[in-house]
Image 1 (spheres, one colour):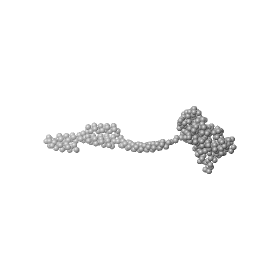
Image 2 (image 1 turned 135 degrees about the vertical axis):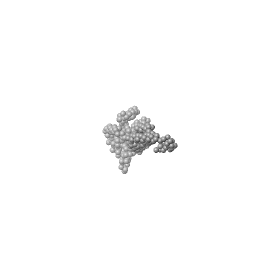
Image 3 (image 1 turned 90 degrees about the vertical axis):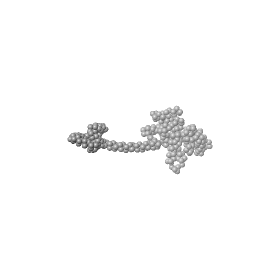
Image 4 (image 1 turned 45 degrees about the vertical axis):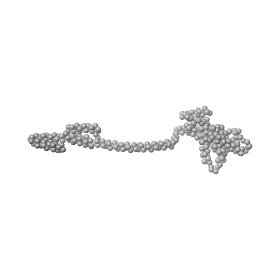
Amino acid sequence: MKEFDIEKLERKNIYTVPDNMFENIQENVMNDIKTSKKAPVFKLNWMYAAAASLALIFGATYVFNSDNDSTQKGLNSETTYTANTKEPKTEGELAYETLKSDLTSVENNNQTVENQKSNNVYASKSVSETEKTIETPKPVKTVNKKVETQMNEYLDSFSNSEIAELASNSTQDVYLDIYN
Amino acid sequence: MKIKDAEIISLMQNPRTQDKGVRALMDAYQSRLYWHIRRIIVDGDLAQDTLQETFIKAYQNFHQFKNDSQLYTWLYRIATNEALQQVNKMKKMQKTDEDPEYHMQNLVADNTEGDAEEIQLLLQNAIQSLPEKQKLVFMMRYYDDLPYEEISKIVDMSVGTLKTNYHYAKQKIEDYIKENYER
């Protein structure tokens, strides 16, 4: 062949094509789309994956630490609970007892003994014990009154000259009386 | 065609009408895309698989389609990439001692209709003897009559390079046919 122009040649498709090929292709494509819709594939970006991992690590650390704190708090609360079981008094009860002790201290001459006893009540003793401690000053009070009457009777028995002689040493006696 | 494309795009962009859009897309472009793929791959079954994959990729990546290019240009680009990937797979599976050009000519002979003209058979053999880029440019220009500007968008080559490639491809084919035509 000497002269040949490709542009003059008829443009033909010479390959064999199976029957219903395009229908089959369309059906396959639509089936594939339906399955991909039912089970979507998530493509995870590596940056998002890294961020999620970091968040998980920090989150786990925070939760772990907060758990430790809460267990410690739990233990503390348990100890306070046990301490409370040793001292089951409420603030109201304590305030009442304080007021009561103050009032009794006004009544009683010996204030220091009363307060020391009430302080012991705050520390460790139960309500029944405090009642006992409140009851104990009663014999002390009676003893003091008896001693006082005995002292008065004893002083009445002295003559004026003897009282004058005793008065000269009164300062020392008063001092001693306080610390008896 | 322009209005048709606008309708397809509108259907594809709406999730409720997406299936209808895929159907419309396939009805409009299946024949053109099939023959484009078939001329590159030659094997009928593989061309069919590649066309299916092209439509699935188009459906999955339709959100990436920008209205600044034409729909068929975008589809041709997907189809060309899929077809070239398939050709690379075929080359890897090919026997190492077999001449690639000889292999493709055998494939053409096996897939051609019995009553095909000799000159048409020679033309297909001549096309398969071309380098990859020249083959693509020649087929899109000669068979599909695509403008150089659109081919440029599909194969990422300048219009000047495309014209040169087409000229060389045409020259080689004519020489091949002159050399091998017996009548």
